[in-house]
Image 1 (cartoon, one colour):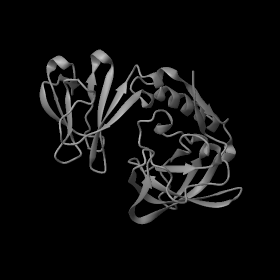
Image 2 (image 1 turned 60 degrees about the vertical axis):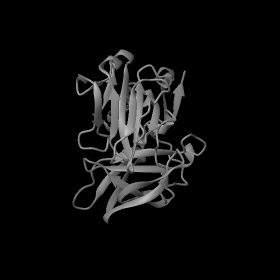
Image 3 (image 1 turned 45 degrees about the horizontal axis):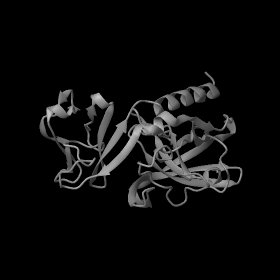
Length: 264
């Protein structure tokens, strides 16, 4: 299979994942919690709160409310582990086709609500994407830091949060040499937040880029900007994506990858 065919397959899988019943487009709310039990929708009988550690989520419900955790109805008070835990929890409401996902950001707990009937999911009409261009698959070199670093960056909700970074990726474009700060993923790959003039007037103004694990010997890796993709906050207003760290901005337009969300 050619690189162009691989890219097209990736594109097909990417859009299918976006259209999933409880995928990115289905998020209808992110509710930040404190230690006071309260419903996330006024008048509902189900109570949610942050656990004493600030990261876990406490749920109180009766079996008649129709919530399911680990295959069993919730009947009483249970502790839910967030997305940052080794074994995160998810709660479903099968009668309403809703998925409830506890998350944690810097010791603050929240609950995300995914609705298979979300208006954003129904309105989605695909993505505006540049045609594949092999010239945007750029050789690069990853140079790890001495140890992980955390840089405070503003998130799209206006809150500054720590962004973990593990090294720099050096590469060359037609306007010269560049260097992006990058994070290592669980599988050893790279994850980058960057901005360029093609999305300057968009919301959001930046994109994400993932790359395979660099070669152990010399850090060699390919940055394929054809696979630059829109962050979750491009699809709904309920995500807290980080903006690019210092230095991860290009003056050269990157006419590759995803550009905009199309709606019907």
